[in-house]
Picture (cartoon, rainbow, N blue to C red):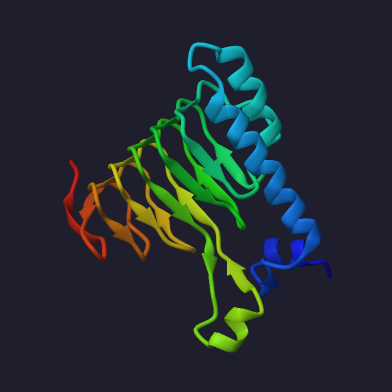
Length: 185
């Protein structure tokens, strides 16, 4: 089984030293660089870069610069998605954003976990767990979403939150760690 297959199967894989994964990350970094250096008014070129990065045509999605991702092909955007400036998606596993999702500035979606044991960590091992954001979700500015988290439809995550556990549908949640504050009627 290749390191990429292990990565996509939520198994421990060599993230730091596998040549194929290094090449794929370098390609994504180059595409992100090109995207981030393209004028916001050059919508056609920006769309072309996103199609190459994601591997599909996002429907009515706006991604503001700067934007960075590890691979790109594990990001799945629904319709009418807005990703504000300075966002990073560590997409060793799939990161799914539903329809009508608004992501504030300086957010991070982190699918990777590393071993607690230093010897294993120094081998470059990591495990990637998918992140799923439902429809009609608003993620406030400077939010960090950790590996394996699901945020339910219609929820709002307050600015500065660190989301370490699933958030149910139709709630306002905030804090470090992020907790449900109340339901949204």
